[in-house]
Every structure is written in structure tokens, then in C-alpha cells.
Image (cartoon, rainbow, N blue to C red; front, side, top):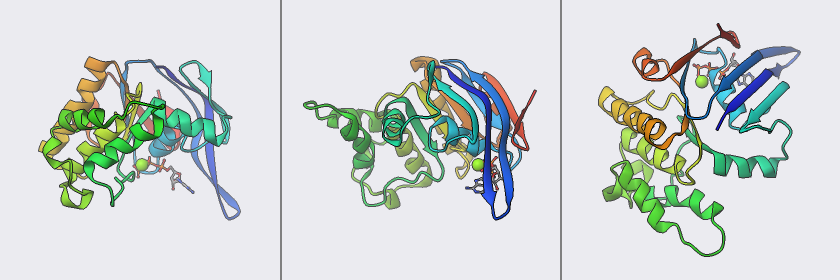
Length: 222
Ligand SMILES: Nc1ncnc2c1ncn2[C@@H]1O[C@H](COP(=O)(O)OP(=O)(O)OP(=O)(O)O)[C@@H](O)[C@H]1O
Ligand SMILES: [Mg+2]
């Protein structure tokens, strides 16, 4: 599913000045592409992903997902869109601490399912895919950092979304865990045709993607 930004700007008001987090960004990511976003701290990478994932709205410009202009969707339509079209793997998107690994993965399935079908098996299958079926009853606090991030990936895949947005998904992990996460994301892209956008500071990770988008001061460098 294609992602397209046309002239997107996002500014934040800070007292009587503005922070220009994104300035007139044009970007097209084709369905099935795997793109890394790199750039210095504060260059607008997270803001970019938030706007694509409808967690935030641009101050000006248009956001088009799969050919549909989603810039002005109501909050209820955009939360539906988030649930079905996007899988988020964000460092700050913690797992719900009072739910087990299984329950964290099952929750979005339960929220989206129609009447009938339970989706419990689907949740277990996803945990198995990330190698964690033996940890299904653990709370997040009883899992290692890498295991928590793998649960987050399983949760991101719960409704089989066409687009995966990952914001420094390996930022706090050692190299072995980082490799597992990156292998999983690469497989999702290559084998399942998911569109994947990864914000990273790691050049090695960036090189594994089809294309690198470089950001600086809220702009994409060309
Ligand atoms: N809610 C907000 N209110 C005010 N300013 C904000 C807000 N969110 C982000 N900013 C500012 O917008 C700019 C871009 O922030 P953003 O989080 O997108 O950067 P980033 O590239 O993800 O950085 P990092 O690599 O450190 O995560 C920064 O200067 C930041 O201070
Ligand atoms: Mg960031």
C-alpha cells in the first residue's frame, strides 16, 4: 500500500515561537518498499512517522494512504484506519503492563473482529512466529527487552496491516536481539509484501533497506 506526503509541514507552538518539526515534505513510499529514515536527533523523523500513522496531523499539506486522502479524517475513522492499516513498533509504545504477552497481542484482534471468530489462535500463532509461544503468560515486566520488542512486533501484525512503521525498534537492544528484530522486519517485507518504514540511527540497519531517506531540520535531503 502506497504512502504519499504532499507538502507536509508540522509546526508546534512553544509560547510565542514555533518549532518547525517538518517543513514542506514530499515523499512517496511504494507498496512493498522497505525504507529507512535517518537523520540527526530533532530532525523530524518521529514526527514524520506519527503523521503517516495518523497519530498526529500536519499543520499543512496532504497525507495519502493507498490512494485515499486521510488528512482530514475524523478521530473515529482514523483510529479504525490505525487498527487495520498500520502496525506500530515504537520504543515509546510500551506493551500494556498489566496484560500478558498473549493478551497484548490478542487485544487488537479482539477490537477489530466482527461477530463470531475468536482470534485466540491467531494471537498464539503470532507469538510463535516471533519465537515466544513459551512466554505467552508472562507480563512485560517478566520479559527481556528483546522479548518485549518481539511481542510488540507480534502485536503490530495482529490485524495483518499492509504498512509497518517502526521507530528505532532496535534502539535499546544488543546486536543479537537487533538482528532478530531486523530479520523479522525484513521477512515481513520480503515474504509478506509489507510496506516497512524504519527510523534508525544504525547505518547497518539502514543498509538492509531498499532506500534511505535522509532528514535534516525537518526536510528530506535529496
Ligand atoms: N509535541 C511537541 N511539541 C513541541 N515540539 C516538538 C514536539 N514534538 C517534537 N517537537 C520538536 O520537533 C522537532 C522534531 O522532533 P522529532 O521527535 O520528530 O525528532 P526525531 O528526528 O525523531 O529525533 P530523535 O532522533 O531524537 O528521536 C524537535 O526539535 C522537537 O523538539
Ligand atoms: Mg524520534
